[in-house]
Amino acid sequence: MTTPPPPQWANQPVPAPTPPPPTGQPAGWYPDPWGQAPWRWYDGHAWTAHISVGQAVSGTGATGVAGSQTAQQPKKPRLPSFLSIPVILAAIPSLILLGIALFTNPKTVALGIVPLLIVGPVLVWMDRLEPEPWSSRLHAFLWGAFVAGIISLVVNTLFATITGSEVAAAVVSAPFIEELTKTFGILWMVRRKEVDSIMDGLVYAGWVALGFAAIENVSYFYLADEQDLLWETFVGRALFTPFAHPLFTAWAGLAIGVAIRARKSLWTSIWGLALAMLSHAAWNGSLSLAETEGGAIVTAVVIIGFIILFIATIVGVIVLQSRARKRYAELLPFIASRYGLPPDRVATMMTSSSRRTARKALSSKAEKQRFDDEAGAIARLAAMLDHDGTADPEHEARLVSQLAAARNGTSS
Image (cartoon, rainbow, N blue to C red; front, side):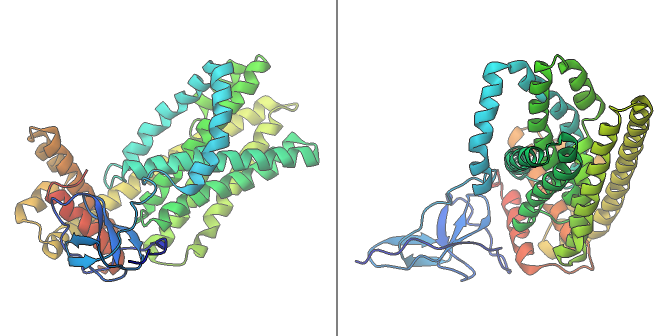
């Protein structure tokens, strides 16, 4: 018997049509029912994008839902979905620095958690119609905290050292590298086929920015405490402007969401990154001017402008949610017909109030989780179809698999 070479990995979407998930089967590698590769990973709930093309050998049996095939099964996917290689690599130095701060000045780390308690619930509220998987949201948060955080720290420090100006670093370097690395976090979720709509782009932008802000706040609080300015800095960053970074990065998320919805090249979303950098630079520049003569007036103008931008963003989100709810109601009968949902499910899932009523009638936590999984899968299908009634067959197959898993009670 020959030894197969190490499996070659790819992250390809599941193609259509979608066979039903192998209900009752444990997580593992099964012969790919679409024939794209010898093996496709089934996570115990639905087919995933993980495939392997390791060569078949004799003497080892593996029976999957597509029949029997003699082959050497490849290894389980190396990382859970809330992690990635960039996150792990960036986490090593980030956690070392965070550990030092926690050991030497724990109150600065504790104060850094406060903005999470303010911004986090708002992001959950934004995402309530088509909730993204928590593992995906966690990955976006960790990307912002570790990947964007450590790269920005290195680049900004080098820029300030070379130019000899902290102001130049704040106005030039910080907006560029911070918004660029945060935007890469959104694009990583696009790569994973998690962004289906404009709201998805905004939500992932918010979680990436929140992760970055959390780490940045800890560093600011740590330095401010050494200068006896901790509480002034805490009030200014954590209480008055906790939404600063999410508002900057929202431009990039908005543009990416628009490009995804219009099925255009992601290069067409570059305007969002440019606006994110410009708004960030304008904000930092205004704060720098606030420290000069007449700074009180500049500070007042900046705060008023920030409040106006925040209110405008909330209004925009509400408008988007209202449109999404209307479009969802229009698409639901089509979704029910296309994917075989019973007629009574249409009435149950039609509005937020009908879903809440149906959910309250369920007695067990498992039933409620199954209901939430089904509602989320339907909402993601609606977001995908919110174009001209057509869909990307490959992405559709993955979402249909999630819906079938939810209805079979096998989703997590």
